[in-house]
Length: 109
Length: 119
Image (cartoon, rainbow over all chains, first blue to last red; front, side, top):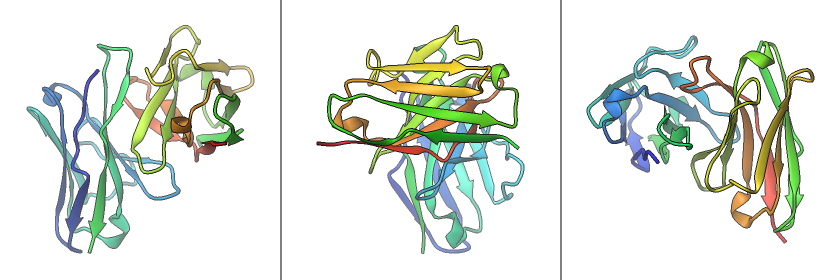
């Protein structure tokens, strides 16, 4: 089945920019979605269809996708952005339909 | 407002069985496919199972195939996951999740229910 690879952790200073990568074979041909999950809470969608922001998500969150890498960018990082972030794609070529990356812990300090 | 509420989690011994359920409201349940997704301690999100709006199409992750059964009752607006032959590695928070209309992602999540498999 399709595999998505994320770095385990990313650190960023408050007010700076964090970039979280998601690697996959020709991922640029797929729609990539990004979820934020804080401890004890359900995940929330922060970027959908590579670069769209759902209603209520700050403009500081943006996404891109090309080649073998998709990227979630958090601009002007805030302490409240500390969370685990997961990329996700739909893999219609196998029975394992919904593929998540391993997750990236973002620390703002 | 879309609402998904899981129930039924708890402590179960290895080899045992447990049924978790999800009650939904705020949308036309039969129009949407549904997923179960879990989060094990210290691990990442893992997709577990998919069921279409009519229950005609069902998929499972390899890790649970043959042990878990997903079902839904559109009249009662409920989704179930019956789990058998539970293992330590099935310990996780289980989330009920609504699939987006184009099937590509998840657009709503419940708060989850904790299943602990331990002797």
